[in-house]
Length: 178
Image (cartoon, rainbow, N blue to C red):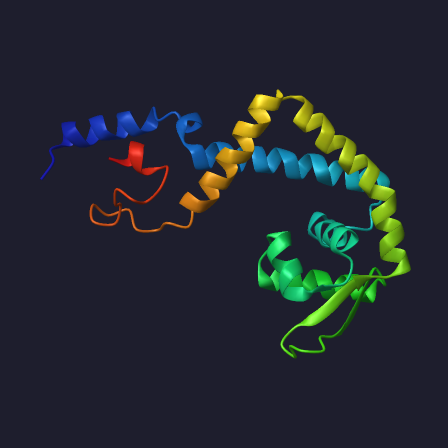
């Protein structure tokens, strides 16, 4: 059992925790900034779309006619939000949903003319933004960043961090976990 002095010392140590050292916190903060930036661009050029709706339109603009499951995975949003976005985009005539010929559990999604116009109108601005963001990095930094993102994505699949849960063969993170 800890005495009051030890508890006080633990609180002081935790209060001084530098959140900038925590990788998930940094990634979250960057994500929030990037989302705010994208929302501002979308609002400036087409206030009728939300960021998740734009992501779906962008994916369909690139992939053309796609199964809903494929679009959902690419969009990186939860099923409930995805379903609401698709319903709204269909009602607003940006997206057309049709029955999948082989898999009745999903639908085929494609942009309507209106959806294609929105894609063509917004894409140049968001592509320039992407170029601007990548321009902040050298070629070497870009390569390292893309590699690091892929490694972190694989490491994020791991959920057991008990002493027995982290093994030598768990991948790139295993070096610093031990």
